[in-house]
Structure formats: structure tokens, C-alpha cells
Length: 271
Image (cartoon, rainbow, N blue to C red; front, side):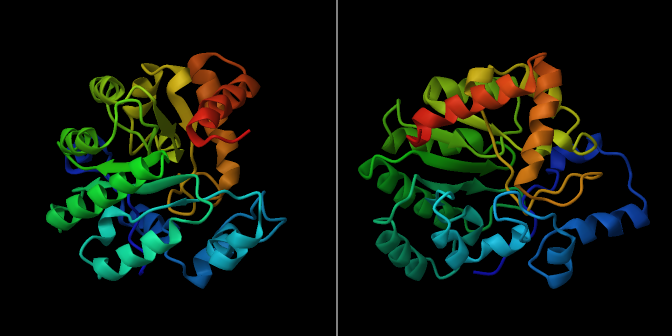
């Protein structure tokens, strides 16, 4: 599959919150996007997991299989809907018998228009059914205006209410947070480097403060999220997120790390 553009461009309703960027700033932002090019690989920060190698090099499947410290999920992203899906689904079902922690990320994405929505819904249903049948948690990618309710409706048709859910890169408001929790009480919401992008997501900090720490887990989504003024995009960004949450909740960083790890353990069933 070809790599997609960065998933987390501001949505249409967010644009009014942004300051105008100069042409120079726009060029710099474009350069920061990771598309697998050799130049971007050179700029990426050394990975704290893989003994000094570059994080983008870790995207190599053979490397990931060899390193037993790295645990996996498996899923078909909604942006891949309609792109030879029959072949992908067959391969996906064959591989699901492997050692995976969860299904996903999967979901619905209308951030760039309702492209292939029928196919998106079809692929989401297939993966939710596999998540249910295999008794694995599901990682949900849900992005775009007024799409969360539709995603929850589909999930509620297929999954039992206490099914484990990891809500990927959560950036929505308190009302949406509470609605998701009402539908699926065992949902954990991951806080990503979007929290560090205060120029793009100025409202996110106050929204996260409305959440319970017991519902939060941490995610990097490297190499696709690269906050301005932070060097590279790699798992080491987790430290910056912990530091930010520590200030926001007035809780020591070590405690933030312990709480969010404990939150993830029952969801993913690891020690």
C-alpha cells in the first residue's frame, strides 16, 4: 500500500482557529511530513527502542518481527477502503491468526470528504466482527465532522458494551468523550503528540483536562505526527507528552507514566 499523507491536517471547522502561516512556514511544515523519503529518514530522531537506528527504519516488517519487545496490532485503515480491498481482506484474515494484541486501527474517516464511505463501513464491519470473534480489543480511528455517532452506531450493532476499545489520537470535546464512554465504558483514549501542537489544536489542552486520568493512555503515532519545535518524530516524544500532562494535572511525571501504563495493561492484557 502506498503511504498516505499526514492524517491529522486541521479539519474544516478548525481552520478558523489557526493563525495565518507565511509561505516560508508552510514550506517548513511540508518538509516535516514523513513520506518515507531518504531525506526525511535522515532527519528523524534516533529511536530509543532499536539501539540507535533511525525510527523510520523500524517500519520495516522484518525488523518488527524480530524484536520481541515490540507487540503488534493489525488492521486496515479507513483511507485504504476501495483500494483492492478484496485482496487486502483475504490477507488480513490469514494474518489475524498470528500473535496480535488488537484489531486496528480501523474506523471511518471523512476529514477529506466522504470518499468510499460504503467501502469504509464494509471494512469497519469486517474488522469489528473479527475483534468480537477473536475477543481482541479494537483500535478506532474516527476523524471528520459529525462522523463519531455513525461510527458508534456501527460498533454498537456488533460489539458488546463492555468490549475493550482504544480510541486512537483523541482530539474531541467533553460531550463526545462522555458519549463514547457511555456506549463503551471500557474505552481508553490515547493522548498523542497532537497535545504538543498548540498552534494547530489550541482547544485540546482544555479538553484533556476535562478527562479522567484513568481513561488516558499514551501514543506517538510516529513517524506521522511531528510537532513544531520538537526534533524528529519517534517514541521518545512520549517524554514530552508525559511532561505536558504532568503540568496540566499537577501530578508528577512518574505517576503519569505509571497510571497510563496501568490503564493500558487490562485493555491489551500484558504485564
